Length: 89
Image (tube, rainbow, N blue to C red):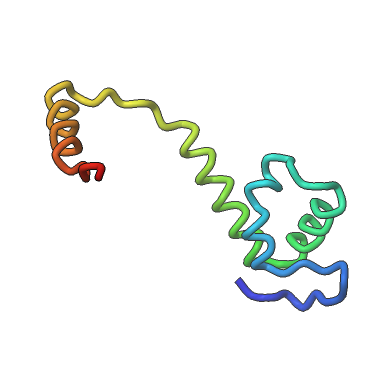
């Protein structure tokens, strides 16, 4: 993502949006930061696309169901993992 022409002490760049997006969507950011992000997103098409993709990924992950690993596969995986352990000195 690139900068969208915003500048000054109260501006926020696209790369900052990417870094703060998880906290933004969880509602964990201070009001001022949240408002800067919202202001930026309104005028930046690449960030709108990024936010929508991020939200879609989160929604898709929430819909995944847990799949039980077959007993034999689980047993084989544990055997491999146990043999790969590095002995403690």
